Length: 249
Ligand code: SF4
Image 1 (cartoon, rainbow, N blue to C red):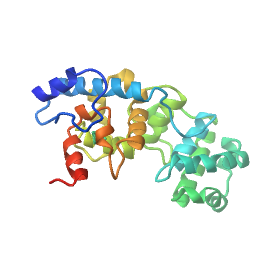
Image 2 (cartoon, rainbow, N blue to C red):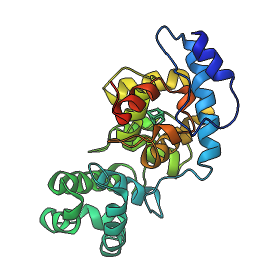
Image 3 (cartoon, helix red, strand yellow):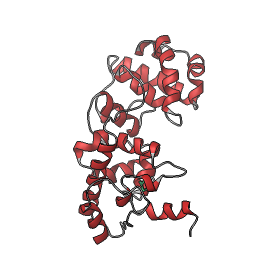
Image 4 (tube, rainbow, N blue to C red):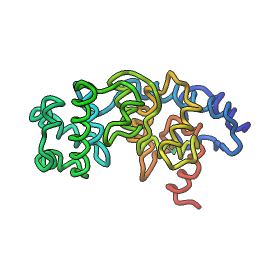
């Protein structure tokens, strides 16, 4: 616990030499974890001042569709598909009337295209029939739409409506929260609950984007760049990865 407090007290940029002190989160209490996460967020905000989704969109509906397409697919690939898609289907009504097979072909390159096409048509129909053709701006309503779970709803709420009702847990957030010792859970809903207990609510909007940026640029899935990481003095996994990649046991 003393090590965590010491780490939290340290100010400024972390070492880039790989000599960050080991941080243990064993026995870390809620208050200490809250302090640690506040420090992590402060540093990441400096490192990534322009946080926003990498998906291109013009309306909440376009973001909703783009987020569904982004499941198991890169944002870059989705951004290549959506301009043509929204030119062909410019309104919610036109996607509600789309033919399943044709839409599957339109979005084939994003993977899982049958399921995605089915969900996009079904949610467009529901929006037309029950929501006057508008995307609702609450978690309660969004998760009632076909193919929309909390992650998608959180991304739409935070980016399109600037509303913080939760924290989107995607593959990057899942990986980083585990490495940073912020949650031991595997289930995204349970990870989100753990995060909501320690991340200040004013940071919920940006928390996903900060971790996604850091996950893409530094804390990569296969080989995290721990020695260059600006929060390595606050990360309990630093030593493990440093040992792993230096070839020592
Ligand atoms: S890059 Fe390494 S030190 Fe930084 S958060 Fe990821 S595991 Fe921790």
